[in-house]
Image 1 (cartoon, helix red, strand yellow):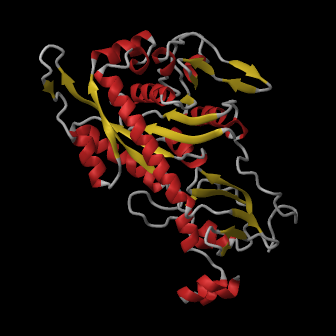
Image 2: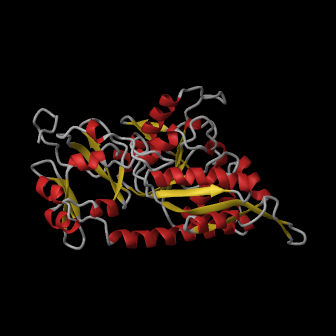
Image 3: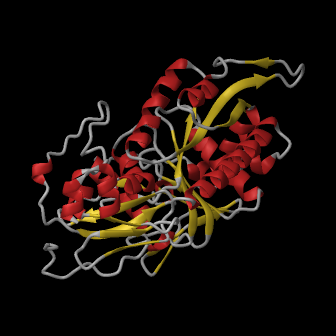
Length: 392
């Protein structure tokens, strides 16, 4: 089988190929929402500080190219990051490393870019920022489900995503769309955070649910996801955002600060549980054999094998599978029989991503799927798939 690469087989694969700045980052978490105005950036900055206060090393990537807000929220408006050996060095505020398009602008002028330019900047943030050693890198996504969100979901090695919503029905409806986007591209949803959950009167302690109540919890139950917690309406949150000192940094005893600390704790507990589950399925190793097939050594001792052709024609990405109907768009006849894998790398601790010789590289293949698809003779025979056993 030819590899369409001048007869040369791919070189040994590096786990962080293409993302050298992320080598020291343990967990990469997208903070997302289906719509604007739900306080996603506020949740991102305060959750980052809450994780830092819990003892973690934390970074924050402001991926909202058109409306960056983190420089203001973290109190570094007008400051510019340093550059060292063509690497962007993050600015540090309140113990948090962060980068933002807002740090690269000379004034408050708008970013008038078409989507390809915004996506290119996101690629720079992924591959050309020197984050160093981090326990968590939070990515504050722009609202919606457009090119920037898909680029990060499909090409950054995400651990998973946290969905932010408010209790009212219109926000929950749009949050479902954002949630389904991540599910479609096989990024795990780590949990739901409900923001602006209720206002507590400082005089009588009576709680007024201005935007209704319980919507985030119901959304989590609907999709069988962890509910990480509710963040109340608190004037100190607004003040902190405007002053550049997140409420979790300025007032550890406030209602909102305690709520963020609780969310950080639950997120950490869920990640630990996820890591335990992943350890039962995460491969010991993976490589390409002399024929260019993918060989996976599973924790239970089983050695799996998959062909590049089968992987490519079964790609689960949004350009190969209709995100609404789940129907496969890709015509298998368009996939060359001699297609090869040119690059591969793990995505978090739950999947592998590949680049093929036809330059397609947006599929994320979860480990459980790769195990189920195994084409070794033993597995193919058990399934009665004689063609796969013969092909291998």
